Length: 466
Ligand SMILES: C[S@@+](CC[C@H](N)C(=O)[O-])C[C@H]1O[C@@H](n2cnc3c(N)ncnc32)[C@H](O)[C@@H]1O
Image 1 (cartoon, rainbow, N blue to C red):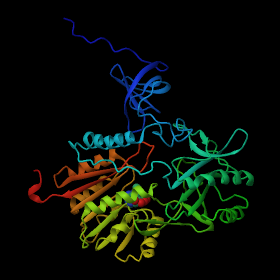
Image 2 (image 1 turned 180 degrees about the horizontal axis):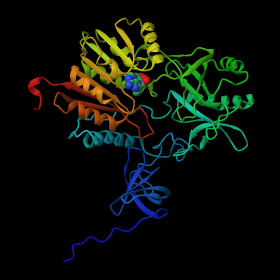
Image 3 (image 1 turned 180 degrees about the vertical axis):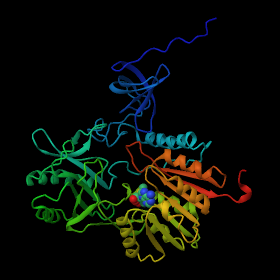
């Protein structure tokens, strides 16, 4: 009997295939299969039957462009945005919200299983958003010029730096939409020079709008290569006058030939350099370039879960590593004996200290420097450590320090399931810590991004695996 497999058919760039989408990948694309090989197709939904042209082909997988939806999935919905299939901002506007939540939870589970090595990880149902549209409290638009030299602002087309001109965006706070079109027009009328990244010439690079969801206060920031914007102060005063919700206009200077949006220097041009916000019952001041979660209400809900899970007694020493402007540190400080925030960005630390004073919190201090340096230098070992690092996760040395100082509880907040799983594996590998619970939360509806808080508890000596 001939047991040899029939040869796998060849595939090549430009080939057109018909597929059924059966999954969504962590970058947001739909996943279809053809002859035991995987094809990634953007703008699709689980259950879609589609015609696809292959645009990038490797032996085991390919990327395809959607040509036609032959049979739409029952989970397909009409996108709220008319450029949803082009814009690089959202990947899942066409995916029904319940399915977005299911997939995001699965992405967390899969990362914990595959990367973290946890079997049946304890992942709760997603913390869903009450309203998955109109939630973003911050929008930063690159600026450009059309062929007829009209000022454009919007987002880049998926996978390119081709600007899509927008006058509104349905995921951002609706109060920012009218400002976008009007400010673009003012920039046009001022005749300000617009930056061209391909030649590193021109001046004005980005327009950034930030809003306090609870206060309605708006901060308008222009990012420019140089300060050479004629009559900037006059225009800034005009904006303050015309839009009472705009409490400040700032200029951030970014002279570098880089994709990074903000440069190091920010100055107030008119009004304040911060906006006021309320978070978890506390007052916050937020500046143009310091980190603040883009979905205020969801960040607050996750904080609620953290507080509930920690069962604080009021006598703990808590360290909030990667603390930003104290968004988590300050509400947690109200429940513990002492809180210490660690943060590398000096402006964020200065803002965190101001925010502590604003709320008359005297049991909290902030230290400027890397967590790598600061955590091992703490005089007293903390009872609880909260980690909320950037996407790349914690440095290996931070995890080693935690294994040495052994806080009773560790809370790891992350926007990247892959690095979360990698770091949890390291923290749990010698049996000193047990993963109690993971709470995934939808901080970024309509996109494939997911936030999660993982709770680790130190095991008593007898409970440890040898
Ligand atoms: C994801 S944000 C979290 C901020 C804060 N926990 C919050 O919820 O608003 C990460 C923060 O870590 C800071 N950061 C990045 N690398 C760091 C490091 N090695 N040491 C200390 N802080 C760092 C960033 O400046 C940023 O403020």
